[in-house]
Length: 200
Image 1 (tube, rainbow, N blue to C red):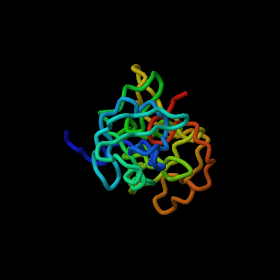
Image 2 (cartoon, rainbow, N blue to C red):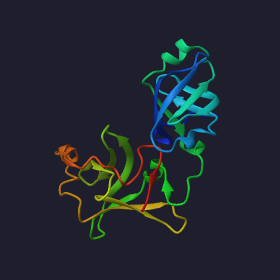
Image 3 (cartoon, rainbow, N blue to C red):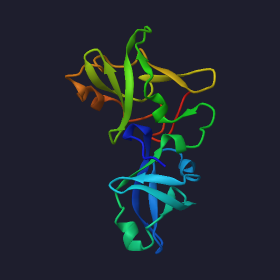
């Protein structure tokens, strides 16, 4: 199996610490925890691809049992590291639910329908998720949240494009002033972080 590039991977969450004494490690999951249930491998920050021996569903979260991690001390070493899945390995989402990697390459339009730029990535900024939008003047960060951004779905209920609403504050695409995103409401109704989102 090939590793792919960083843009071919979606962040699922991060490791919280050991679960049990035989190498299980708890994951704080961003989004729906069931997306980890059938994965055969995950990409671990600083470790690379690791085979998933077993995924144990918890309430909440998931405990992963990974190849080569068989002790509590080994699980402790993973604490705080981010865990990713290859986009191609993720299960098919439910109708109206989308993965954030599906937003890459889509156009972002303004309230009047004018094309503003292209989404090249979605990043976790801690308190909210941000679209990385490439436009004529460079790149800018746009908060991915209602009521500022809507995700338009195609006939197959997959993301087709994104649009700023009339409620979006001005200057979001100013490359020399990205602090506007800090003033946005922390509530993220446009979708769950990283793993998957929902369209209304």
